[in-house]
Image (tube, rainbow, N blue to C red; front, side, top):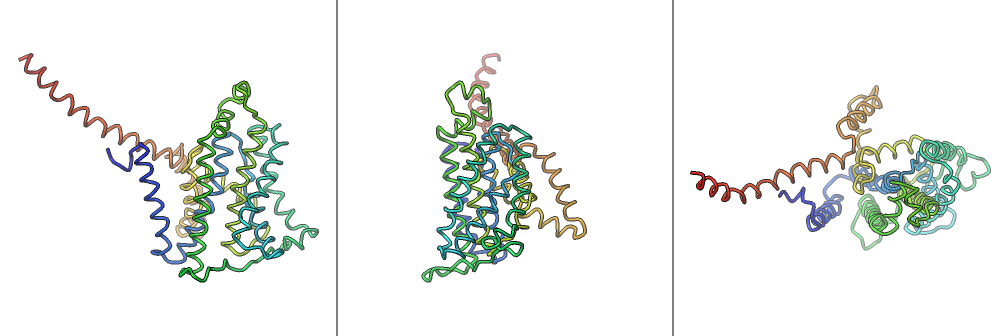
Length: 344
């Protein structure tokens, strides 16, 4: 059996170790521009993972996670500028703010299902930029001009440039968030979240508090988006209301679908798609880059209806079945020879 396509725990652990080694060594072998691109992939992966927990595993459709991403970004900038708080301390606070905000938003959203919930979250994504531009909040949000912060300081004892240090910082945060999601989905809460998606009535009859878990899932998902937004603000060193339009929420949703709904690693593949495909489309056609992007997206949905992870699983299962047949054939060969000799 090919190790890359093995499904046993040891092979999966080996794959994770290989990915970790590649991720840690990446900033030391590529130019700074590509380090920045890789940093944005990690940031988007965190946001997409949170949205996948909500949409893929719990069945709630959200088109407003760009708003929580923006709230996390603004929370970090405001804390740094207004209180002088260290940049690393703003990340968990931004996540906590979005956790509470998402949980509170999820309570009234309990009355909504499917497309109606999607429209409610879409309204949130449309409203946020206008709220940030309101004159009453200009002291905090900077109004139309937005807010600027300095670059992330590098510890004196660390022989890295700013791009390398920021990448490793985001890598650590992303690893922690992926670990949190992994433990959440594998535990009792994860089973309850998935049960609600499959059949809310049956889940309720089994004693699962569907209202609480749906609101809590919305809050956890928003927390992931807020952490990603905080890291995005530290990377861009600037935030403005026009950076968090509804198009960002649509982009997140596209990334989840392309990566693979209800798949853990789909967030990473979706983040790669979101980060690089628009740039590639722009290089292909300066006149109509979004047309190229749209054609690419249609092609992905036609060729990979279950996402990139779904295609990978299909290829893995096919190759594993082919390799599994070889030992079986070898084992049956002596029996076939004996049977043939008896018939002769």
